[in-house]
Image 1 (cartoon, one colour):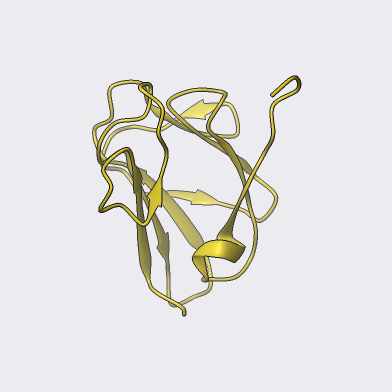
Image 2: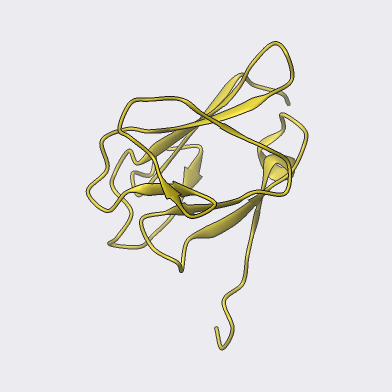
Length: 99
């Protein structure tokens, strides 16, 4: 179902679990605003969260538009932002060449 926020990280309790050492245990939050916009917030991760090519300031919500590439700590953890507030519809994993 729809939820206002999803936590991304290595911790098994996260909504989206990424088993990669470049991803922090609680790495980032993907938040759905009532306006329909989606914001990504880095939660103080060691290797950063990127919206497009911009590294996010920790704990500062950043607007992410539909079709934006989001990276969690490493180019191996890349996701394409989609439009709906369902976790399986919000982020689509981008497969790296050769993996």
